Image (cartoon, rainbow, N blue to C red; front, top):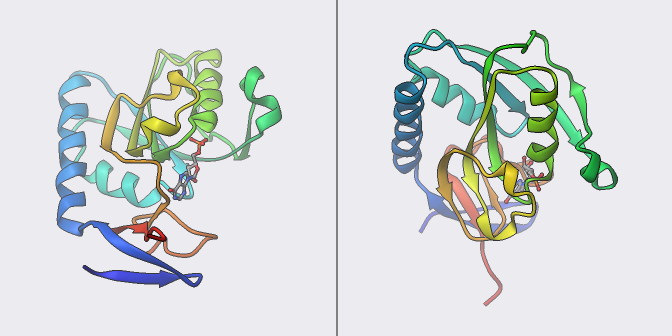
Length: 181
Ligand code: IMP
């Protein structure tokens, strides 16, 4: 099994480039079918989702647009749904069909706040696609993605855009932290 060392920890390959490519094209096919006749606006959540967004968007055959945000969520404001935008939305979203692109939904805190914010600002519809989903970690059910690449156990993963202290985003496969035992 292929492994990498990042910040002195060992990670083992979990999804190969080929497996990732299949997953991404299957998600795109579902979105293409569900949004036929519409012109959705994709919102890529930086930094982690940029590689998934790039691959996914190439498979989208709709007259779609894409824009980017960078978010910061705070535990203390979780109940109010406030999410700080480090890079704010650049385009109007009123009456748009929005598809948010995330790398991974863990507790769902970030997406819980952001989805609510998009609805409050008048989006016609808001759906979420996430390359990875950790169902056992979820604390905010409204952040459950409609379009999931792969559901995984609650383990730390990196590569394919996901980082460990900003390292490892450039790995083309997905890796999982080797467990102690
Ligand atoms: P949530 O708000 O708890 O759902 O956190 C989502 C964010 O946590 C993701 O966008 C990632 O930045 C980060 N994250 C969660 N799990 C992992 C992981 O296994 N590897 C790398 N980043 C992760």
